[in-house]
Length: 327
Ligand SMILES: Cc1cc2nc3c(=O)[nH]c(=O)nc-3n(C[C@H](O)[C@H](O)[C@H](O)COP(=O)(O)O)c2cc1C
Ligand SMILES: Nc1ncnc2c1ncn2[C@@H]1O[C@H](COP(=O)(O)OP(=O)(O)O)[C@@H](O)[C@H]1O
Image (cartoon, rainbow, N blue to C red; front, side, top):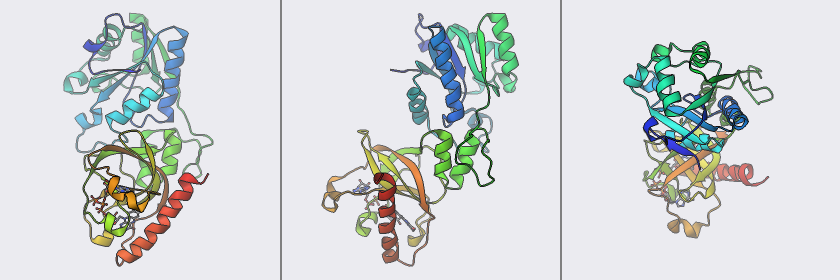
């Protein structure tokens, strides 16, 4: 089991020696995964423990609250994705102006050495850390020499062989920005290729306009505090994972439901292939669920009325079924 700490004081005295990496890891995409693989390799070579130091909230939200990018994932999904890589521990540092004011050396001494007993540090080539982002890979290497720890730098990870953008480029480096751009276009397939897994949102199932059942397509609506980047408006095939961990195939709708003059943007998932007579027994309200986006089906359309919408929804569900279940 992975250890999750929220402060260096929670790290047991006898923990270590460790190999540590630092970063925001928004998305835990394939580039991040390269760094994490190296972290585990270095830890294995030295019989040391592997630790990820990450920050919450995301530094951009503290420094540029008005213009920070929408995050790809909430903290829970980040911790899950980090745990999936097999690291021994994650230290989630509370990010605030006090932490931001630490010099690179203070950060290394207080957090990595005194807190985590780091013997090695594994970092991406574009590392920036310490007050005003003043530290980089060179700074880390100098501190390593001075204070006696090893530094391993991981190079860019491209996406050769991946299905990518229509500009034909196949060598774009994996990045959170790329995933955001793909999702903003509804291209959840490219997002999944860069992430190494489907994009997901997580939220509580709340009451919607109570129209779904009447239409014959009840939907679990995510609350407005749901985490995870909201992909472009449209209809998707994917999965709903309930609180018990059961994965249900789903047709997912993102948008303001213009057929009904809706105004607020909803993310809602209709679990497909459920027997109609069991609708009353299938209750997701109040549960915190995950919605995974695997394929885009079409854009959001303002239909003239519910009949035309229902006709299209039947086709969407059949298409989702074929994509998700007919292998
Ligand atoms: C597969 C699927 C496709 C949908 N497509 C559209 C659409 O094209 N246009 C639209 O206005 N609403 C669309 N919706 C959203 C419905 O309008 C919405 O689910 C319905 O009004 C029920 O809303 P409620 O959950 O708030 O009761 C779609 C929903 C699903 C599940
Ligand atoms: N196949 C299904 N997919 C999604 N939710 C379902 C399904 N069957 C029953 N439900 C339940 O019905 C609720 C949705 O009913 P609906 O009439 O769409 O109301 P609301 O407007 O509150 O979304 C869901 O939150 C869930 O508890």
